[in-house]
Image (cartoon, rainbow, N blue to C red; front, side):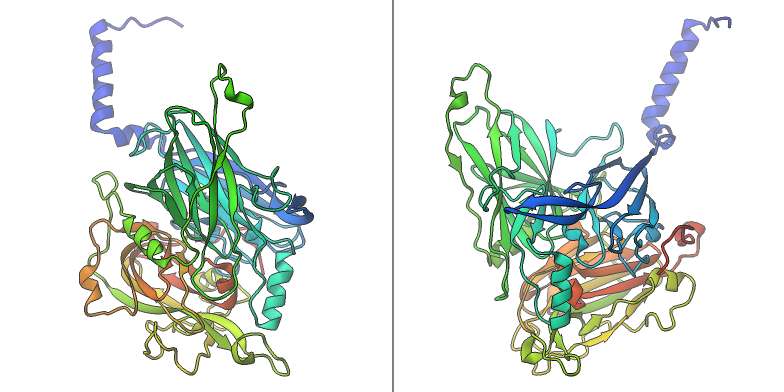
Length: 582
């Protein structure tokens, strides 16, 4: 091969031209490298695990709890092969991933797919588009997500920076919930008796209960930090039934992201996080190593009189000591954080009101301004009649139920998305989900005398690109409670919230349409309401449900059917050939 002798001027011109095109048209350069394909293999297997002095066999991915961390960059395609090697039917949900035109990979059982049966495999195939931050994955059938969960970290595109100081290290902190008994047995028994299932025995941090529980000193998460360094803690609440307060003794946290959306940074000693939510916080280690170790702790926020697991999970924050230090073998005092009272609803409201979108040119808040469809949904508890010749453990010997607009959702036995796609909805679902409650009452006052819910597999149908406003109103039927509502397939903007009954003539004037929080899961205030807006720009069938698993089991769920748009890139592609069959 002969060498080419280009004149120096030509080389210089080429360099200048390429630099010019990079700065003037950066997207053209980046477009060639929008993402790579990442492969994961998830074997669903049983594993013996010992916690709280007791060994039990649990369902895991690859024998680990939490399961494997998924790491991707914005724009990457993911191929996750799930092999079911246990006795239970399984599905996995990639919580918070928008799944643009890839609803077949969303994962909720009997909504977007039939479950993966014993011995079967399914390849979840989707691309992460326009998202970066902390999400997580979990099982989405029965109560299997109690041990089937893990973090899902989406890094910004290469050469893109965070809109906050680059941390020294990033640490996932996943909150979980632990029962000594078998959770499938617990929910099955509760379903049979019509009563409430037994509460958990412990909470966990990264699968470990921590030193405040029996036999658990060795099962404690420890975070070692270097003095003066900044750490990004990726907080994830994967607990089944409990919202959690979290704090680290003598340290302030700076909230910089919620549900994989950057927020205006604010400092707080305490973070409130509902099941289904994620929160990124910056932890600044003290400049000089203190002569103490620090407890990080999480315990429930619970608003109703119902029983709950009133225990505290904890981990330990330790400072790395300089090697010359003589205090290496000294036992330092352990400082504990103070957490709010379990029913501190005022803190809950104030904390959620601090969360605001960045709303910058680079990270805009695209809040729908012109609304096409308005919905008012009551969310709460109620009852259903007991089976014949049976006495149930709910109020008035009935069965406890949960509902949206008094409809307690009945799970179909084929997947809604298939029924929709192949125009076979007859006998599977109806499209008459009510846009408003069946009758008006004082939602947060004295409940009506008849608290019986109705049942059905009902959906709302939305044309493509519908701008939706939805008010979610808690009720005091049985008890007022904060419900973390999760919407699949979309992010939404939290434009307003308040206590008491929503006032449609006064409250909208106070909506924040400038920089509201953008989320995928929002806590409906206990004895209050929250208003959200979203653009229905993703064709498919999208589940919306309370992320307290017990309420989902009782029927606090529904689905949105978003129709195809006109253009090719606004239509849902056909299902993959390996989509599981019912």
